[in-house]
Length: 306
Image 1 (cartoon, rainbow, N blue to C red):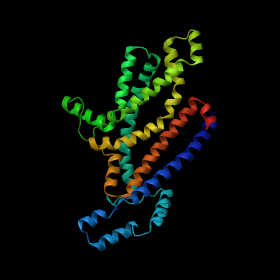
Image 2: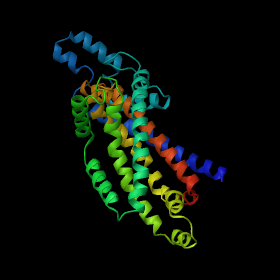
Image 3: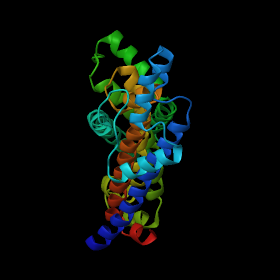
Image 4: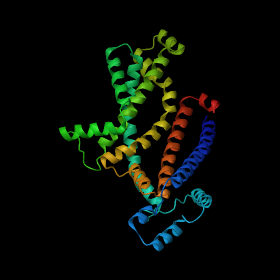
């Protein structure tokens, strides 16, 4: 079983590497094809053309686009993300510094989403006919429909007017809730449907007929059987946390990867844009690998289908 799981994860690892390289290269191409470049601001400010020419030569902007793409791809294969034109620092150092902050935010948001969404999903799926379950379902749909930016603005308003939670720059709870609550609502909906289907499966009906206590039937047998579809989306959930963090980080002044990406796009810092996408791709790939490994351990049939 362990060897089969290792082989399964190895195949997924190769796919993850291809994913990271592909999205990083695509980000470089799209950013380079966009209007303007790293010297546009200097041109607008009237900087000496000789200085601008020197900057373009240093950054390789005077080379044809295919040559720039070839150099970027070779550097990427050597894990060299280059220099940031805006910050005049290595992109890898900037991405690691800001990425650590975003990873901390995403981890807390994912933890909150998991601790809230999965147990509530088991409740609403196993006891779907009760008024409490219906109320939770309506609340989940409402939270799920709320964009992260609207959620964080609402949370900031409540925190500022009540004083229950600090809204100071760098505090973690408000941005983590803004990111985690919609994800928790999505997990609750998915877990609810998976639990409802598991409760109606023949093996659980047979277990109930054998006299297994209802709480064990729900929280052990049904919960375990419903994990497969939930674990399958965890990689996507992690990706959504990183993609949704840009608006939340901007609204809460959180010094993370989302704000760095926004600044890089605004200033045409192509290497930094690609570096941020590279870091996001790694996080998405790691999330998918972890989810695939857990699914493989929870349900060995997954390995045979891959």
